Image 1 (cartoon, rainbow, N blue to C red):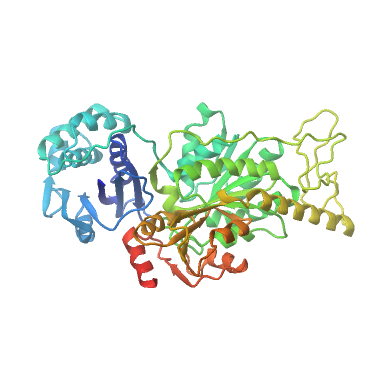
Image 2 (cartoon, one colour; image 1 turned 90 degrees about the vertical axis):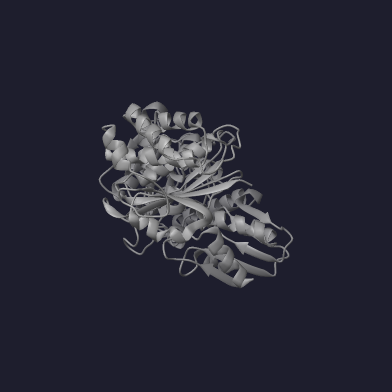
Length: 546
């Protein structure tokens, strides 16, 4: 199978991430499946930024340790990553700033001769890369024309000049086929929310969830949705609940620190039974932690956030298709059961870029029970789900209440009604569990009869999936984490005698949930330095355990 990994590095402000996206887009246009990992410190200028772009003939959602090409804009990139270079790999570098073995290009000379700008060195390096890989110019130029945002003629002139400097060193296989959409995890989630019928998105920018806000704001006019950036995360959740009360499907996005501020609003949604979708993209904590690095350490917090007891739904996508489907399903679930529905992701998935499907998932229509009149907002139904009506409605008052209330929404402190409303929420939780505890909630890969099983969730699944192909074991991935699909999970583990849990957490988040449901792992492989494991790193750790 043809597969190529390219590492591109430089300082913050050099446009490394954007250059990586263009490289990935060229690979995608050639028919490859592409994954891009982005690594950067919390600095506006300076520091060391790098991207790893992996192109393969089959879908990939993780990166490998080695690199076939290193593109170095500075000496630190060449020095820091030289150990990654494969035996027949090459360093393509800016000869004005870097000393290395490989092929150097004087970006300063190319740019100054043609009266360009320093940032255009990115275009030159991209062009040089595909010249070295032996890709025809007519395959590269159209992607540059599409992906470069401004001064395209000057960029193409500089790209062609760099193309003429290098000589081909390889002949890249061209798989052919249609070009695939190449988007960030945040963008895939945003499209899924739209597919679910989203009307409004409200967020305060917080890495690594900010990409959803930027993406949806960029297409708000053409999609007709409303996008707002209020003054704080507290304002975000309250504004979104106001949209939902008024009958508009609303979602918010944040990360750990921002979600801390939203928790009282989550409780309000639980008591008032107001539907809301909440995307939480995890980063390394506690507090500010590592704001631009990844973790899986907020699951238990999200699972228990807010005071009191009320049902919620939590899903964790690991692929572009799951991001589409589960984000759309979050909207449906929130409005079907009138609860908070969470999409839990992390920096690796949110800011990683993936090729994915061109078609949206086929979703069945969402039907809402017709209310009886006179209307009681909290009518006590057998499944705990009251008919939902949004104001204004002629002759009716639609009253929601954060206080304990009766069926009409009137405040009460009556002990019988307090118990009745708590029992109503419990029946709703049971209806939600029955709805989600089915085969789609848990994915099984590898040898489905093997006695050894690896359990993982979220973005870590990409590495586990590939290691599964190297060893004969079973891999089980819960997609829905609350309510926990215990019946489906138990069936997936039938015949298993040894369970290994892999996650990016110091204390074990999914490990804790498994133990609460009577599933006791034998070993736990944990990483919590903010960096995702490469396929080879995880394979070595699993090999040692096995």
